[in-house]
Image (cartoon, rainbow, N blue to C red; front, top):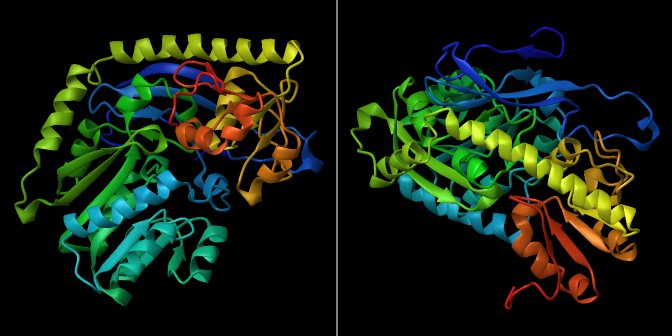
Length: 423
């Protein structure tokens, strides 16, 4: 690591130096680099954000790797408490129980465990749990709620300590964190240290096919180093003696896949879902460069449309604000060139963000209660992956004449008249 980031010419999965460049977003601040009000005039540190695809294993990857200590040692993303995510987490408990054939008292280990919300549900179901997360501030919250957690980057060392103290894990789980990890091989070496011989590894990642089909360019930022397909994950797991045996698509985070892998020695055969998605990926062009060239052209077109729409509304005197301040939202604003001249504020439920400014755009973040008092004419829906739930929740805002701008996959305006019943 030279300075604060490293430039890569080799694929982190297969090691081949055969990357084809797709799109460059230029140099941008970190999407989670929220700014204290007193530091608004200080120059932000920026990092290049260039996207490429490996012609060998078809991993879509960032060319630059920012020092993970800058990204994750103090983290402001807290696991969502939305209805959609809570329901999904309960399904993960059911899935993990089934895939790993869990019995009461079995050990579940989660990497990227955040504040322990997911592990807490496993704990309630009668299983022993241990989490590993590099963000000390979030690990402290997890331990306070009674979910044993370790502040560290998951790998052989913390995995060995867990195995020595608690025994081998029947289930190792990684939800929405695997794409953040540079040295994926070190993580899988850690899985080798702690996973029981007949146990299961479950990894949940945003799905590359959904990213391309739905033009989710705002999910590309410095924390997300890898954009996975089933094709690539199967290749990666095989390098570590793991067989991908099942995969399910999930609607969370704009579209994800939940994959299950076991040790080759178990003899377990892949479910039909694996071959089905491998075929779909080939048919959809994920194993050829042309599909990625089309994506790059679509990104250029839609970022211009979003920017023009918001700037035109603001120029006409409309009061526009942002709804939600997730990483994808800060990224969308930076890529589209939208800032404090167009947006009065952003509303977000995460108290760690209140009173701070969004990176790049410098838009102030406030609580939902303050936002209701300052009711704008339009909300740019930055948390678009919860659009249905948010629009249902904010029906009163629409009935009072307010409107939502949903930016992805293409910008559209939602009003009370355009919402179909029931929401």
